[in-house]
Length: 69
Image (cartoon, rainbow, N blue to C red):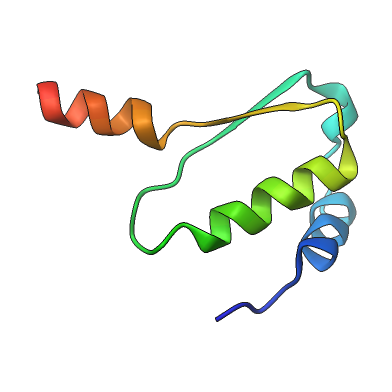
């Protein structure tokens, strides 16, 4: 279930003070509590605000750390 579209999420981020133009790379963590759809919407929202930004989801990196720990 989505509460916000990617466009609405982008507006929320921008109005909340997130300025993606200040960053070349943005990292976020998907903790794996669902199907990843909310993270996909967040990714699209960030790319709406700045098409040149590199978005680094950390879920795979964290999964590797947990498996080796």
